[in-house]
Length: 88
Image 1 (cartoon, rainbow, N blue to C red):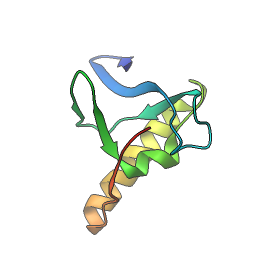
Image 2: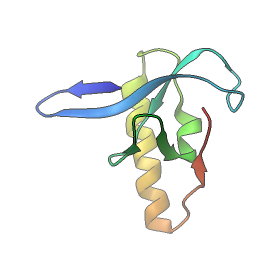
Image 3: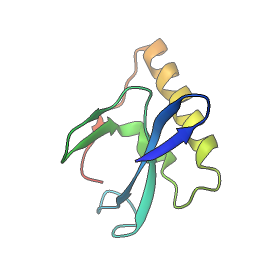
């Protein structure tokens, strides 16, 4: 998990090995997480829109998180949510 430890600690992303769903299969990637996440000891579920904001390093990841969360807010406002992403 990637934490933002500002005034209040918050989980903002996750580092995972990419699957065939991404062009960088097998490489480690950073996935931004929404404000609210579903996670267990084995699975992490994020909206499909996260695919558009995957990063390969921390440079610019903060901007990717902000843009991803803004897209989610816009999708909720317009009622056009993307399907959930599976199998990073």
